Picture 1 (cartoon, rainbow, N blue to C red):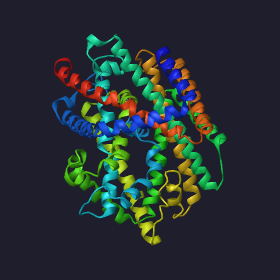
Picture 2: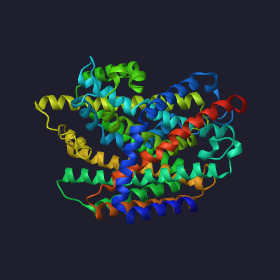
Picture 3: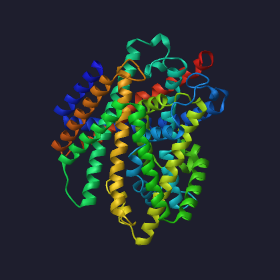
Length: 484
């Protein structure tokens, strides 16, 4: 922990003292990573999907994470709730309307389908199998190491024994910790800013940095209580609440919209997605949206999913004890993807119809801060819907934070799958202080988007993990048969 926190404090000091230079450097490096390694990310994503599907349907898929007769530690409902809340969370609310509408107004490539179906298909692509395959690869390798080979919950558990305990192995674990921390403070900082923006829109007010700081304090406090209570009493209960309320919100919009059109769009877009998945993943022929579009959207998403893969995948492995590899891998790839596809179909199709009823569109749904609130303004009980959305934004953010703090605590407690509470306390406090400092720095430097800069920093730290995943998968496959 000392090395990780020391490096984080050193980086924080550099950013604080040389903010403008740091921001420009992060911006340049982020674009460089996406422009030079974006296609590598696409091929890596396709490879991960095919690899996980291959293992799931192979005889290896019957292997269990744990003793042969052990039952799953968590019910399917609880398990799916936790993996979805951790893996996606608030993003599906903030992008529910904004992204499908953007894709409709700016079609990625020429096609024989309608702009609406293409918009849903491309949104499915960016939130579907590939994102979960990145998470699933870590879950597969760490889960097998943890429950089948009784190793520690560390990223370095995935590398050959001759490297374990060396500086190279420690460096891998430190990089995982640093990436997770940056992801957390970026998520809390940006998430609270977005919630503040939502409050400003709903109440027609001008809430500022004080409210954002209070929201960060509230989210961190709830997340600490959750992670202190543990997986069963804390993280699992909040995750189940998130999914239940999200499903109720989804059902309300669905039954108050054109249900037949939504189901038709969902079916068509899903079929097109399955048919076009491979050519879209290698951007062949007409499926290539162009480097500018890919850099701003797909490359950015892939790098972001990669950056979150270590802690999300490890958390999924931790909660998957008692399941077979087939159950875990197909569950990770299919369950959240289908849920996400239907979610975007409901909100996206309904938004398209709203735009059509307006007769013209002036980018009303162009902001992640306000698009979903403007959308709910077209429905009955809009005030209640807005309140539920803000509650869900907070709650989803809590589940991202508590699961990440739990994983950080496992890292620094020598890979203990049930880390000591002192580690949970230390990381909760450290994350809170770092987030508050980031928010204050962002307001002290209003001409520099500090929060977005930290988010883009994840894209830079994702690059070594992208190469490491290739190495990790190769080592796993080469040793799997003989050492399983």
